[in-house]
Amino acid sequence: MMSSTVRAAELLKTHRESIDRLDAILFNTLGERFSHTRAVGKLKAENDLPASDPSREAEQMFRLETISKSSGLDPTFAKKILAFIIDEVVTQHKSINRNQ
Image (tube, rainbow, N blue to C red):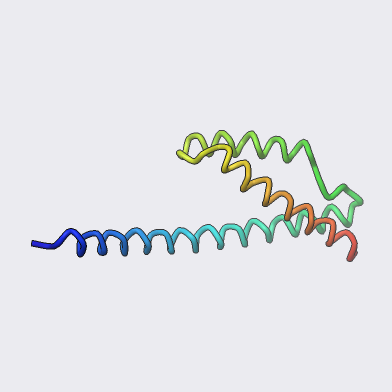
């Protein structure tokens, strides 16, 4: 019979492997997302469009809130993450615009 400490260590290892795999998925997905947002930033700069789109950002916040609720993620936490991402996107768009 396996001791509870050994069993706990095995379960911990399994959870950590899943976390590591999911972290890789998250960061690869963010990389792909930012590739698209950089393309959007270039398009905006080339067409004299503003770096920020408050209407789109509000739509995204609402959409993410709905997704987070259905996935069991705290909507307040999800909004914080999206706000952080949007801030970075706008910063990148402004930088792209300055360098055009």
